[in-house]
Figure 1 (cartoon, helix red, strand yellow):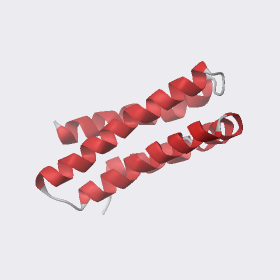
Figure 2 (cartoon, rainbow, N blue to C red):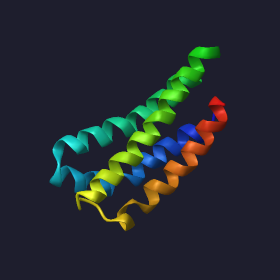
Figure 3 (cartoon, rainbow, N blue to C red):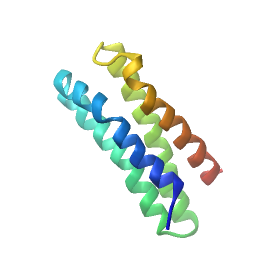
Figure 4 (cartoon, rainbow, N blue to C red):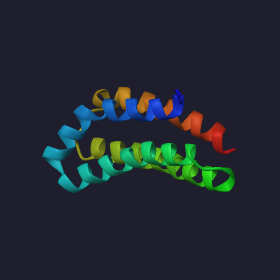
Length: 107
């Protein structure tokens, strides 16, 4: 069964391949945090999909929060000069799409 939000979370991970490699070379801890936050989005969407009621919403809200974390990490990496804004365009576009979907799912 297709689930657009989960598919978008996998797309975000693919969009982050290049930025993750650049961040890893510059700041190993920031790399781990970016990878963990991006994984958290996909994993919480998937887990929420298998739950019901408030438990489902709880996981999807965590995923929404993780989209904010990924966005902030990208901004920090840009501010430190590890990434350029151009390197983050695809990931930011997918993040925007994910935020909109998760917002509708949780509100």
